[in-house]
Image 1: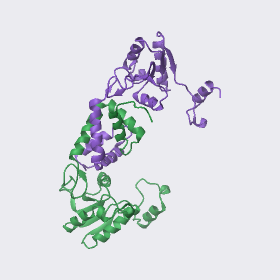
Image 2: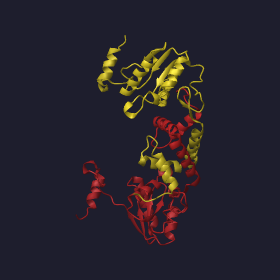
Image 3: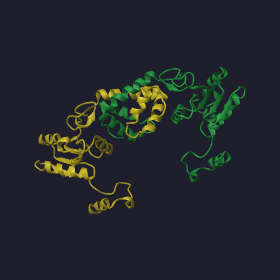
Image 4: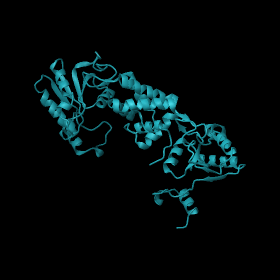
Length: 201
Length: 201
């Protein structure tokens, strides 16, 4: 064990920073030192921003997005097409799709994927909320924007079953070659899917 | 530009997190989301720890270490050998040496290295403080634990000159093969130094 160099307050800051994804024990120490050196410009504002986030951030009761208002700014945006719901696993996916700015629709965050081995069944995910939204009417299309993983696809199949009773079109994202991707580095599954879904040039 | 997904509070948190060393814009977003999800367990405590650090952390007026007390816990530790001062460039170096637990001595943090091109001369570093400490007497050895870089070595030479008038032994860290290091990957300078300083086996 290393000797105590700095006060317990600094040690505690380092320990907490080490829990931030992207920072390990070593980089947490470096980050803590940098923050302490930039006390006025960075550490103070960051402490305030975090305290504000703790106080204000909440989960949208409609779609499961995180925001400072409920319903979130996506759900309350009247310019969005309310007839299309993009179902995503996680808020990070919602943010990624928003950055792509490809669709101006609404979202629904599941909060994970079906994973029986981890004890995550339909009741652990925000599926009931999705059914309720669709049962309320007005939704014409549900895009299953889940990850192209086994868990994601299993969840997609389950949702398709659940939604079969409603008059909604259920679609999924296209498989294919990522833009900028090199064929040489792609797996067989992706290449086969890209060939199967080939389009006229 | 991406559309606004979350409230300005979350955007601000992401922007500030991106300034933390080790986190970029992309990982800052991921970190923010993780922190928001773990609001009670992580974001709250981290906000508190940061606010506490802002309030309590100060620079030791004796050695330049950062701590919540002044003089710092290293300087006020009576079990340490006050006759030896290890001169380091940065607080991070002090922490690294403490983790090595190799010496039970005092420190002196310069706050950088001499770098005329960047406008960093002797007055920009905590050199006067070092001279004062040595002039007060009681110091027998000054270990120049600066980095083995050109700037570090230049600073070491300057300090040696400055300390030549005092009755203190000035030493520097040994050059050689890092423990666990493979010769194959070492530069010629290190190998030459390791050979020159070879010891009896």
